[in-house]
Image 1 (cartoon, helix red, strand yellow):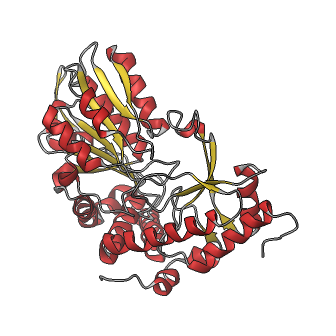
Image 2 (cartoon, rainbow, N blue to C red):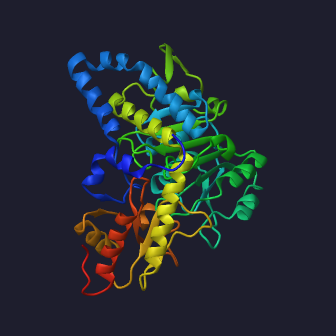
Image 3 (spheres, helix red, strand yellow):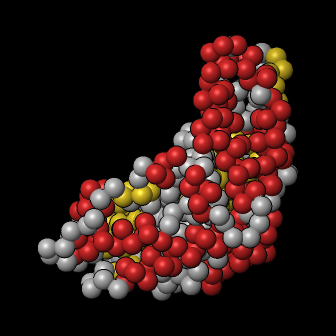
Length: 405
């Protein structure tokens, strides 16, 4: 399927769209009926045939999931594994790199200002283990990473790792990750990338970006079940990583004193997983591929820009996304009220939004930037009328005496 997305058909395939105005897709999107059926169907099969037996019966579909995930990322099937979450994938990757000796004592790690909490916390743990230090690359005035500052920081031969974020959880800007990749390759420094808020709503091609590692979740823009994630590790790079949490899928137990890590991304694989949610993830990824990521990006981006224009038309409302290029995440504050109050007014009107707090992105949500924002994130199955309903809800808080429908 290509071209414009048939919104009516997508809503028909999404049971939740008739129950609620869901504008919290950056948190967890509504799944399709097909995804729901895949999860429930496998749980039922486990109850009837046994967990191991049901997994064996689904082996072809699980293998297809890996191929589909690789296609979505522009990677090879041997470079991608399914994880339980973005954070799980990220933690195993950064610790695996540290345990493999990639970060020498006294080394230096560079990170951008829009880093997400669990990613930054993982890097802090690495610093505790290795006595490395963290350096924060400044942002430009529009909030994106300053490439000139990054290039200058990479001149330091102590730099062991660059960790960047494609799209932040708390603002809708899109970082220039491909340009950053050129700089990292030129300096010969490994490049880890958070694509948690971009995969499924924007094209992500790891080869074009030039990253060595990328992590994502399934529950956001991919519309997959919670408890699913993806880890990409570039072919060849995995051999220098020794991830924690080994098992029979990630290593071979040779004898009482020895083990051998499996090759490539397989060394990050796990035996005990939720097969049902993995199958749901596969259905969700195939659905995104069938629609076409470019078509999804056009629809989501258009809704995001429409919502921004509507919001700035309300007296006193400020949009905080920044960037020359933006995603479907729209963040804003309203005068004389708190983001929590705005979210409560939206909820009372049957609309789901969320609130991003400084605890999610402490490096960026400080100083002149707000420490709390309303986050609205429309997906391709949302409608323009639903955006209008959110605007009415915001007006009900900002304009005294006005009520939302």
